[in-house]
Figure 1 (spheres, rainbow, N blue to C red):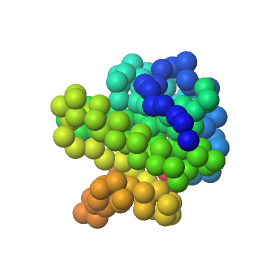
Figure 2 (figure 1 turned 90 degrees about the horizontal axis):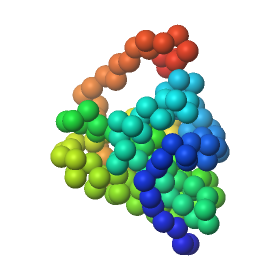
Figure 3 (figure 1 turned 30 degrees about the vertical axis):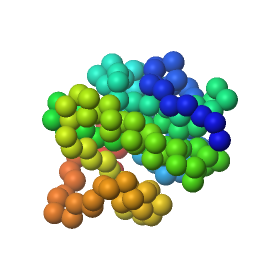
Length: 150
């Protein structure tokens, strides 16, 4: 299949939001503030060179949002449309993001995956991302519109 990978811009928001809503696992990772148009615009301004879209026939079929704080990076969203899975698109998006992060001097990247998302956990393992069992992930919502999670 013929597709290209390019940097994400805010003009891609509607297509990306539609893509995220194409699968239950992606939908459940969204929140109404950070994943709104305004939230993604803020994110892209802070991370203009580390977020990528896979595009086929003018349609966004995959996306990865990665960002960093100057020392560590995080994969915030990786999604490939169900019709385009098992074509190595996700792996190419990850490689492109990792390359961009390295150019910015970042040496370590992490991501969060729901424990019950077996396909995603297997994918990340295959990409060389190890499972950390010696840490507890903690979060606190500073906005009542953002759920704290389970």
